[in-house]
Every structure is written in structure tokens, then in C-alpha cells.
Image (tube, rainbow, N blue to C red; front, side, top):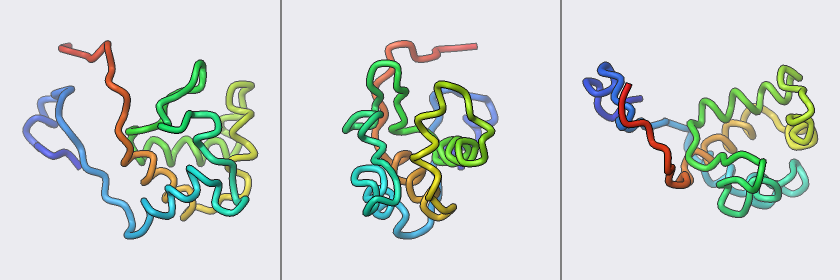
Length: 123
């Protein structure tokens, strides 16, 4: 949800958004993302870095929209994203249920994103 409806309607690139997630999902997501949830999945930090801001060609996920993260996890799970670059995600998602994916998305979205040096300043 946009923090400021007017700025959202004006398509202001600097407006903020709030994602509402189920209670307890951020705590559960942290366990899954950092530790793998007792072998349920592979830790996100193993590839995306301890701060989840990406490593080399591995993209940053910290601070991304939880909706975006959830859509991507579902796409990996269903095979909609089965390219060579997405193949490493298959073992990550194969045993995750929807509640686990929501929790991971909530946690990842709650982390601070890396500062961008190429912020969009206008249309």
C-alpha cells in the first residue's frame, strides 16, 4: 500500500510503500532465509550474501517488494522460471509451502536494500 496516495497517483518514484504480512512471518522468514529452516530449504544468504544484497552476478533481494519475491519463488517452484540462470533456485523452493514462501518474502522485504547509485530522478 502506498504511504502517500497522492504521490502514488502522480507516479512519484520516491514514494514509499508498506507491505502487510501475516503475524510472525518475518521471524519465520528469517529462520528460513538465514539458516534454511532445519534443512527445509537452502539459506538465501548462501548465494545472495549475508546481507542479501547480492554477490557478483547473484542479484540483491534485500528490500525488494514481498509481492515480487513471492511471485518469483512461485515461478521457480512451478517451473515458469526454469532458465539456466534460475536453475540454482530449484532446490531452494522444491520443499517450500506457500506459507514458507510468504515468510521468506516478508523477511527479505523487511531488510534494507543497498543504496542505488543510479536512482531514477524523473520521467
